[in-house]
Image 1 (spheres, rainbow, N blue to C red):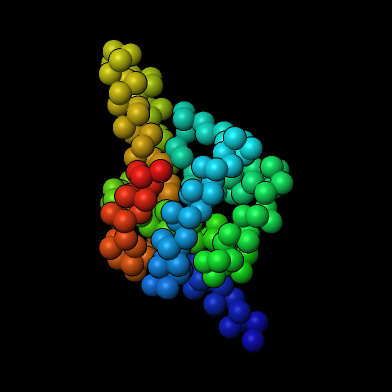
Image 2 (tube, rainbow, N blue to C red; image 1 turned 90 degrees about the vertical axis):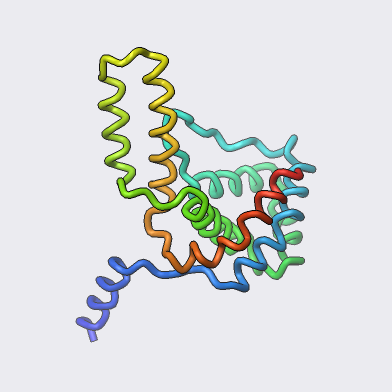
Length: 179
């Protein structure tokens, strides 16, 4: 029995699993406009998560930090009640779906890079120490930072999840652009 457990743990740590289902993506997309509108109505009470633009964006931290700020503003119950109208039992499920879908959308939009985030960060350090003019360094560093952010956030996203969210990409962009 113990060997079976060890085998399953090894398998789980090396296998990329598709976390999303068609219904979870549809439910999330269906909630997006309502939740984004709710956020806009309360944004004066919710502290924005701090984002260090000198580092690649971390989707996990952004969503977790946002939920902490909702809690800090005393709006957790209202937020959870709004989510329940979309079939979410609790906020954490929505955060998990948001994180997984956002990462899959990033992978769908930008493609998965052949370089790891660590390799891209190494290139950024090399660039910073290069003899290139400062303006050119800044421009190239921004491109590499975006690539490093995409690589860090799309690492481990399954092809199944990418295929699943791809048909919703335009709808999500329309919702976000309309707000």
